[in-house]
Length: 476
Ligand code: HEM
Image (cartoon, rainbow, N blue to C red):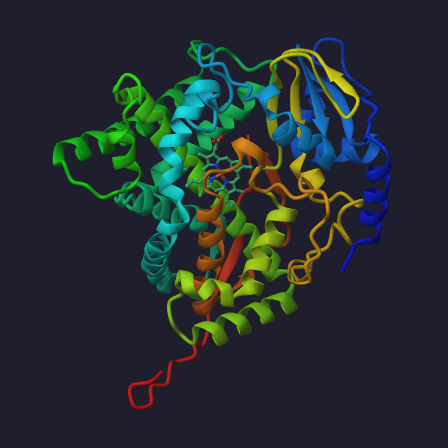
């Protein structure tokens, strides 16, 4: 069903090159700019600014000027059409933000290093490998929720549970190892380090790393722990000489086409930690938000359980089941729309660049407001409503960058297919066993690099009557 507003927008686009006016967000303070307001609640602030002032905005965080773009055409220019004019904001010589944690890995690097490393890592995510990965995901899922039996009928923090589950999935699929012994520590280390990284980028008063503050000490401690874990994995694989055909093997065996040199230990550490962090934190948040949306929309939950019971008939799901679980997939897609785990994408201009009639100087920092794009009334019908059906009715907006949960263009998420399998598969697997019911009043989103539910989400794990497979003459 076409969306009327979209038709109008398309008609306007067809007749004229889109052009935008850059609006300066009012209320900046002399030294700190808008840092005070932004720091209090970054997500709410970029959403409110967009609603009040429009699709192309400029604001200041201390000495940094940022541009907030919340229109699909501007996102298209930055991520696809003129992607060669934009780089990531990180400088490996002076790491700030995520680079403090992930170093110069696939998420944070740019230029030739990024190109070479993407060529090494991409084949692991080839579609042909996904069925085997799905089996492993399902195995991990069943093992993990077997431990839930003790909590049945009691409230748990579902955000933490999803984090631990996704962490084990990524450890088993990418590194052929179990992290169950360390999950609580890893979870803590990532929470501390991501908070620190986010603050270091956006807070003009963030103290330098060398100062002996309690926060700096805590950051150093958690990073030492993470480094120890990753270097331990590398050492153990080298020592054992075992081959698993996983990401770790791929990284260890990679050779430069010209020099024949392998990746340095620092490069190996950065890439392994990047996949480790990027590969579970996002999916875990997406799953937590989906459970929240289901718990607050009983009709959607009933339809979800009906689909899961009918299609699986008591079995553990596999990749082959996914095409038969369209509603489950639609739930995941709609959850990624309303609560995109990466709610903003950052870039920096390499040279003076013009997009949508706006000329940006070299080094200009841009933020693509993914969260805003996903709720843009010109591109979505009833944008604030949870309507999984829209994905079944082919209601996708015409603009290709109106929906960007995985980014777009050359820097789009390398794990897109992996996540698109993992999300619905784990939803179906859990939904088969449990009915998750909300056990708290208020749930608030918090932007901390990713979009997390602030303080978690308490939910009661209500065991469901799992339909049994009836076998007649050996035929189920
Ligand atoms: C629901 C789950 C996920 C979401 C919403 C998500 C989102 C994103 C987004 C928006 C980007 C682009 C960032 C940018 O353009 O600056 C990205 C990049 C990336 N993602 Fe994901 N991601 C998910 C799952 C995964 C998984 C499962 C993995 C790995 C197993 C992964 C690894 C990466 C990596 C390595 C990059 C950097 C790619 C590059 O620049 O070449 N992600 N992700």
